[in-house]
Amino acid sequence: MASSFHSCGVCDLRLITNPCIVWCTECDEGLCKECHEHHRLSKASRNHSAIPFTDYQKLPTDVLKISQYCSKHNKKFEMFCQKHERPCCSKCIVDAHKECRDIVDLDDVIKNYETPNALSEIEKTLVEVAENLQTIRKHQQDNASTLKTKRKEIEKEINKTRMEISNHLDKLQEDLMKQLYAVEEKENLKINQLLSALEKKEKEVADCQRNITNIKQHATNLQMFLSVKQIEEDVSSKDKFLYSLFEGDDLNQHFLEYVINGAFQKIMSDIKSFGEVHIEEQPADIVLSRNKAKEAQIIVPIVQSRSFNNINLKINKTINLQGNWIYGCCMLPDGRFVFTYNREGKLKVFNDQGSKEFEMKIPCGAFDLVYISNDNTLVVTSGESGKQCLSIVDLKKRKIKKTISLSSDNYGMVLKDNQLIYSAFNKGLRMINLDNESLTDIIREEMPTEGYTAIFKDNIYHTNRINNTVTCYNLQGERQWTFQNESVLKDPLGIDVDNDGNLYVAGIHSNNVVIISNDGQMYRELLAAGVGFRYPIALRYYGHKKQLLVANIHDEARLFDLI
Image 1 (cartoon, helix red, strand yellow):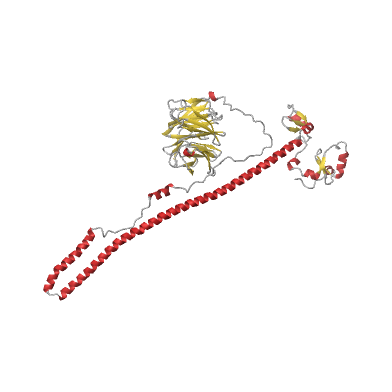
Image 2 (cartoon, rainbow, N blue to C red):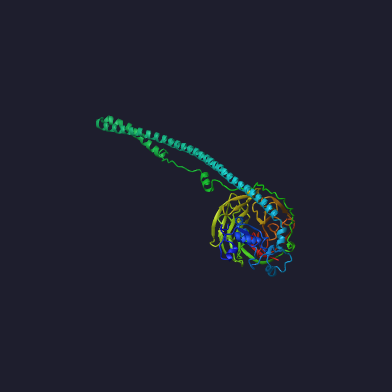
């Protein structure tokens, strides 16, 4: 907003300071009361439009900055170039618009342009926008409220589950304690019985010892002779009792031992979390108000790339993979190649000439991989290794940077805006945000193992080796089309797409690579089985170099130039 005080432009030239009371839009300057009188009566300016300066100050800042004079030539705008849609002064026409034919008088443009109607339409649109913003804001507030409510429900469910587990463990503990006391009591009973017998024998031995002492002191020789036999038999029986204890198992020492149920150890080693919390995403059920009549929509048919039937491949180089069971491949920006070795659980990096640079173990398993340029990392899926997770590899440090746990096996994947879309076997097709690890279900129908994915604009492509199909879905999970022709494509696995939306699919048991048009209607065999080209499984297309990398499941990969 302009300052509340603005001096008169005419008085300024006379070195006099007087506040302006009106603003002449033609002269683009303020006038004091005296100058305004002269301005209003002067023949040259009597038709000029002047507004109170207080009203002029209410105009938006952007409007106040608009000048009627050309900033380059300092001359007033007089004409309008309809081709470039900009006002011009007389010098502008000579300098920059002498080739333009649609030069018209600026006053005529202003008179003919229905400014009030245009502003009225803009006002209506702004009302609509404001209403729609309020609708969206309320929708998001409701969404936040729903999240809070659902969070409380989940908290209750988690606490309930925790309580049920605790109660069950308490019951198991109580039963085990009862068993512990019962076992101890049983063993104590046996020990007490033995102690009682020992105490009895000890008393008998003591009596016998007293009797012998008395006999020796007071008995006659005849009495001593006759009693010795009886005493010997009595002592012998007690001695036999002792030996019977040693020969039997009554004197075995008993210990209480505890062996934990193996199921508990398995639970503690196998269960890594109490459960899983993720975000399920659904299209917003918002209806935006549209008062203006919709313009007729022109349906533009998909135009196939002219080069579809002329796409051919020329071998660039062959790479000795030095291993078997290769399932994933990619090419880095610097020209290096990376491959996954599924049964070894490794990835290997080769230089741009095809020589191996290094290899590293992937603990979670290695199936497919994608390169993320933002942080120079590789994301590796685990396949059906038994460990449901993603491994993020720091290429510079050559080590695992991070591991993300999942709730399903995971196979082929593709990157879209720092989100990974991956084939999740019995969970369908899923998308995970690498920033916050939130999950979104795209397709919930069960997918086969070893499914690969590709993406082009708003379409997702998925291979199904069981049904020998390639299916196109939109981002909402709606099926667009399915390609199936077992005479040309069997067991499709690796898939990628070029800049025109053409699909390249590896058929491992048809021993070929097939190109399919972006509407699924056209196809042809691009690479057939041949020497050194058997069982292709993975491929990647590189648009900036127009190259296709194809990896066999065993031994070899080839880089082709598209011609």
